[in-house]
Image: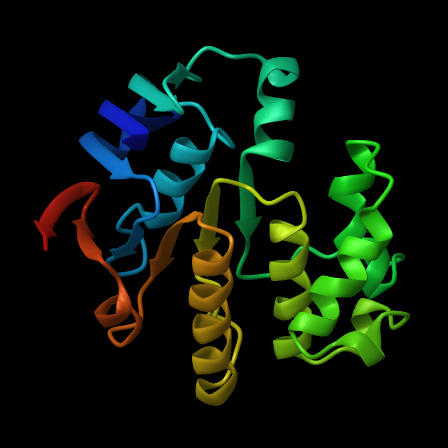
Length: 223
């Protein structure tokens, strides 16, 4: 069964009298449990597509459905539960809260759901990724690879059905990049989730179930 469906999705921005089209008439279905890699050069529309598919942004035209629910016109109140319960997001820039420790960053989404096991789940995830000894460290005390592992734990704590990863290795060296991709693959499989990963790397897509390449906002190739 498809967990995400995009129908004729386009996105454009107005700059003065000019209309800049970032995505052009994208239609796409993603099955539950699939690892989909979205590739393309910088500016091809990868991050914009992830933002639309996840409800972080709204398309200029077209429709997006998650779990058979049309999210296109949902307001923030309607989208908030979806983002907190169905979707996990891993960003290139980590987006950790600087004033929170590793365990506080990870447990925060579960605490929003008033999950009484939030801290225990956070501890378990941090130990699972080899950061049990870093629970009380703040982001500025962590390396780039450690920050990304914390971010992955945060994305997974509510056991989302769908994990979006936007250039998750963009700020990491090759060794850490390989480790992060291996970790994402392992954890998304263990959690029976769907993984949608945007990357400009030529190596990562080879591990995916399916690859879509964007060029100038359009699907140039699918494999």
